[in-house]
Image (cartoon, rainbow, N blue to C red; front, side, top):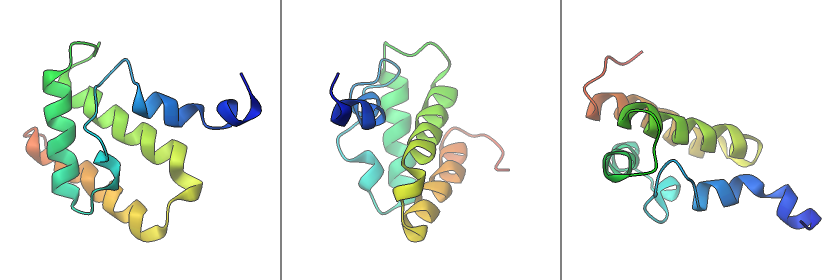
Length: 96
């Protein structure tokens, strides 16, 4: 692996995850509810996930936030954090 590839391994995981087949550009959406709905669709239709749909979707969202964290603007991070609450709502879970 080259240094460039090693540096961005998380982008490869996000794009080609064995857990979920994500819709293109899901983490670039501006509406937290749209992000949550997209993750829900991906989690429910995935044949690769090992956990339940909710846990898989939330794990992927957390993975993206944690790996991209330093490079996210405060506004972008707020959208993604709000997507967590929306994800709980679309799955019928109690918001924290």
